[in-house]
Image 1: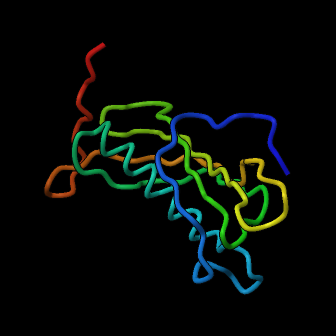
Image 2: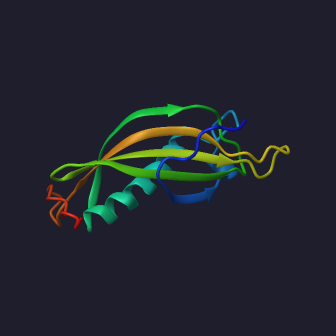
Length: 133
């Protein structure tokens, strides 16, 4: 199954799924996919915030199709909005089947919006540094 669209944002994280990441049906556990998204979104948020961040919300998670063992999982993302201390990051998970069939087309399997907050050393919200235009 291929997706006619292209990934939104930049590639942040790429990894391979492993048998230990499966659910009882033998597909990759949705929680594992979500954790990869949070890792990727956290990396982008940390770059933007220039320091510590915390995940504060996940919304609009959509799982389009199962992910199989051996698939290459690529997380793409972009910052949609920067507030005083928060960052709203749109993330997409695209897979490339590597070990099954002759279909090597990439497809979007999961997407969601993650909100992160810049925090100080005490874990309190702090302003996101302004970027130069």
